[in-house]
Length: 125
Image 1 (cartoon, rainbow, N blue to C red):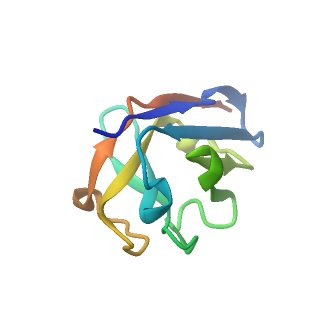
Image 2: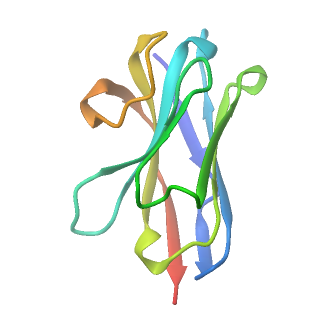
């Protein structure tokens, strides 16, 4: 069973930056699409960004141009660089692995079956 461990969350002022990391255990990391989702208090979990096994990326409109997803297959790690943060970016951020190998980047939450425990991001105004 794969384990995903997020890190890098914290408190930052509006306009600032954070870099989230997600370390994955297990083999064949480079065969899977990885995604970042977030959940604000009282709201549903929503898609943020995804990167496919061949490094194609896909972003939610709300973060496009501000966030960058990347992966380092040698380290079994996926990153989310978040710039120009806004108070509305405040949420718990979750890393997830898509169920199928060699699949495309997807925004569908149901297609991700392995989840991390989350890391909290708070953006103050």
